[in-house]
Image (cartoon, rainbow, N blue to C red; front, side, top):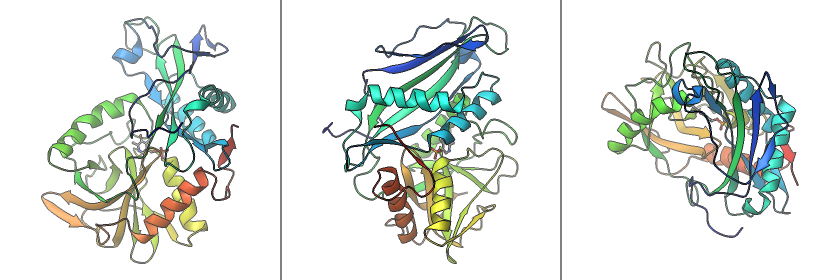
Length: 335
Ligand SMILES: *Cc1c(COP(=O)(O)O)cnc(C)c1O
């Protein structure tokens, strides 16, 4: 496809994949041309948030091949999200095969190499059985749809201003580590609030003490310190980002940086010279400043993407489209 796709606008493609769970088992799964489903109005997904999802991409290489990036990691995380909501799981190989099948069926929608575009893949599961009480549904649908996407930015991303939210995105031992629908419904208001005040997105602090950075909107937060260390927080309520995991690997093994998972206190940001938010959708968004209690902390690299973040970004995106060799069994060919 040669058209220019916008960042995250839904475009209907030819096929979606759907599998149904009934009587304690999954059916074979099939491709369908419709992008509509019909479900009971009493479905648990609609009332009690029994719904979780994944976000991944298929990339076109220079040679025209189509490939996935770490799909087994998405499959495993999907299982964890399902388990957290008492939903049946999908075996890793079934998940990956279903993703491949859906991408292949929509091959003509995989954007050409060299345009910073890709095919976004959205697997998700919903509870769909008749059920009025608060209990797990007897039936489920596992669905995958795809849609071509561009990057959020033309050229290198410009650093953005972030506001520390007064809301929490998750509870200390809640569902923050799972990619479940409810987390995102709850994040809409804090994001709208930040945008209304002129910020690109919000930073969430840890819900227990409100002293440490937890997430950057719906992305993981990381920083590069003065002494060349890649730092990123861990907590039971952070969503374990595959992009962050990959950046840590690249930082350590390809850029010879130290990597530390540690608490990042909101009032101790001076050690950080480059800050970023990372995730599959935008890869890395550099952060120019963080405003907390009316105090604006501006990072040294606030006008352009900093040099280390730029290197991390370029290496990761080149691996994803096959311009650099696969360093660690990250790539799965589709075609
Ligand atoms: C999906 C997501 C991320 C990014 O995860 P990736 O695997 O890198 O795409 C980060 N934070 C939250 C809250 C997310 O939902």
